[in-house]
Image 1: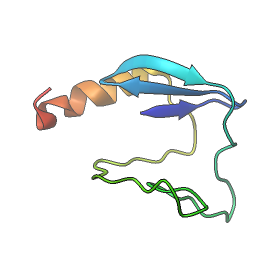
Image 2 (image 1 turned 180 degrees about the vertical axis):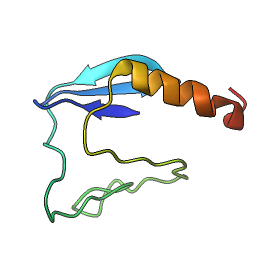
Image 3 (image 1 turned 135 degrees about the horizontal axis):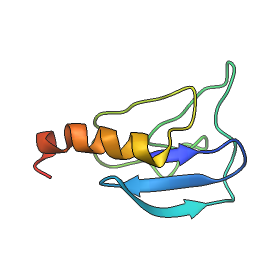
Image 4 (image 1 turned 180 degrees about the horizontal axis):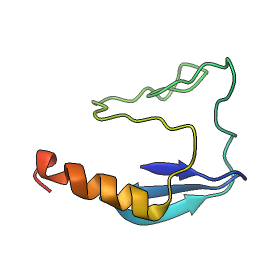
Length: 79
């Protein structure tokens, strides 16, 4: 799960645990802009795999919310 704050930081979580933060990213999509998932706007670096259980929120989730979601769904994936 990535969680983007109101500034320019994006924190990534793996299995409910914070695994790092990136500060030099593009702002999230807003308004009528198109969101691209699994590719970039130049149609390069295509994601070669499956994306499952995608969720989009209108706000950043805090670490406790992310951990709760992980714990609620992890048994589906044998974790």
